[in-house]
Length: 573
Image (cartoon, rainbow, N blue to C red; front, side, top):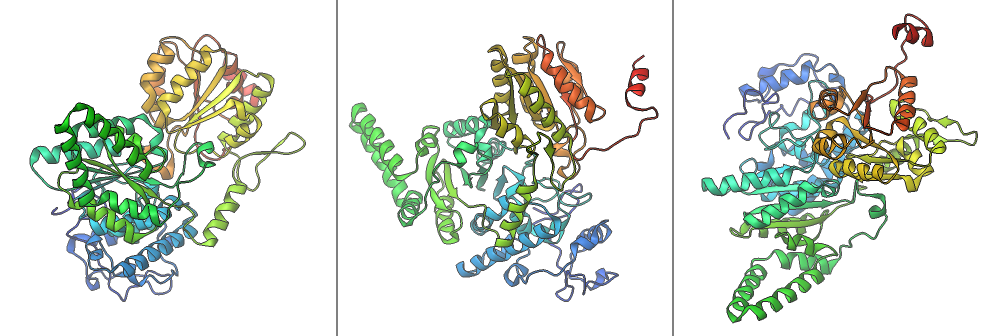
């Protein structure tokens, strides 16, 4: 505990949280032009936090008229949650949701994943004792309520801005963030490592990891679960099932329902008496004989499958004790289940299936999101020309235009996309060529080898992966593609610096690790015309792999010293 490490820019620890005087209101109308730190009820070390807030270039964005949040105003860190009643915790969740909605309207950023996880976050910090207990989050998008409750509320408007808060959990930002989560799928592996280290050192802290739907697409999650089941260390895995970032066909399927019966069964599954009865029954059948024990195991498996939703036995086979589904917006149920799990000293790895809804924001938020979706992406009007609505044209738009034109001429061209979220522009290709578009989610390794298989089958795959996520699939690029000279066309998106997403999403290394491969052709366009030419060129290369990279964001028009083709012709001589 103690104090935060010197590299921690916010200086946020469990022992110290900056306390602004109640007379100081964070609004444009009452915040003083000069801040007298001596009048603030702050720990001496927290003066740096105040100075940091006041020195931000967009400080005006911090102060605006906000919705009253009386319960949240009393909570400066998770310790203050312990004395709240269930009714007050529900009001706290409403306050956090109002706070996030207010920030979202000001910053024009989508917080829907965090809005879905508000009650879950409150319940976690109510039951567990962070930072002694370790709470790991797999994706940064669901951590904003966690940041608010752990002393970073007044810095939330600086999220993803220069000098502001990271969009993900960061060990250097707060001791409440035990592990960084820039790329998904790593929390169970890291949490299991912490749990084993705890056991070896003879400590007793709890380790909790929170994953979501998008991370369940990656193999590392199941590798970690399998190893956790084998090691049998106490570890709590929470699946925040909001059905976000899943394959569209899965999202369109029937959702897991929550009712009084499922709530009762979840409480029963997590209770000490049920757990002990189950272990005693297993011990008795082992003594009776192998045949009876195997029969009892099958009965137990079928019974667990009946109590849980479809697929729950998968987690049981991996060695995790399944509990759920639990209503992720019912704080009372969440606390009951989490308290039962936390009270058991030798339960082994547990998976709690929590069902949440991302449309838990206000109606205004939902209307704004609908309007944004209508403006996103490309559209094709009746004259076969591309339309962008009110937004600026991007490199992704140019890429999709070129892919559509090439795909219309060549029926062997297919597109494979991997990553956290699909670029809105790609929806045009998906709509035009639905049987030639494959979105595999956060499964970059699979995407590369899948593309290699498509190429071996006579197709021409364009594998689109953000630069930062291509790092995860480098072994597949080397072994499954380059060494065999299989013509896969890698489209490296979000190359170079990525601004608000920070260093964790920075695509600074792809030129280095792709250029060293003996059979790989590496290209980078200087403008939109070259990008479109590279798509056409890549479609014609059929004897080796090729890649080209492009940055994120709007196109920037550049006037060359000489005009267009003349300049390029002379520069190539």
